Image 1 (cartoon, rainbow, N blue to C red):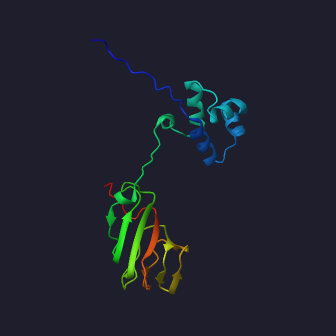
Image 2: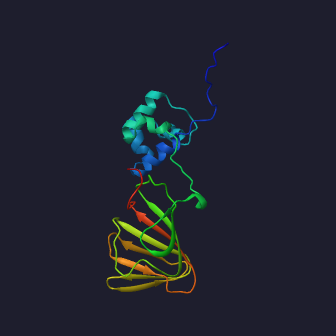
Image 3: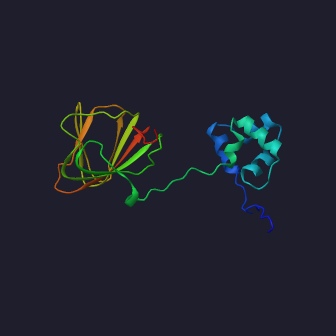
Length: 194
């Protein structure tokens, strides 16, 4: 029996976009990186467009200048798709609401929830807070009344409201129809990763 050796995939290794996005996130120009590395701006531009393959030592130099771990260039992107049918049901404390978590439980940077509120649904009589920096509610269909310490805000289909984190509030669907919402919580108020 002959040994079977792995073969390269043949797919091009796209590292340029990671280098470019890291450079831009640090507000560096190609000229800035060229000055720090001693490489030409044209060469760096071609690397960022994946038109040339730099040597390992050149990659190490670029990564050092950009404070980017070399290994991160070769990591697979962290993408996860959650279909609505598979999104877990959760209970954020309201009544007559069907709420689903649309982001992975392990995602700590943001949480996105989809809520279907039956007529008469409520977040409760008492105002509550969520441990986050920002909470955003977007009305996909229907209406929503948001109750705050200083009064109420009525939202219609297509409206979006941003709340400061930890601001006491609650909500009500005072209409005779179902209201559909998307809640975005930054950072995630909780995660199932622990």
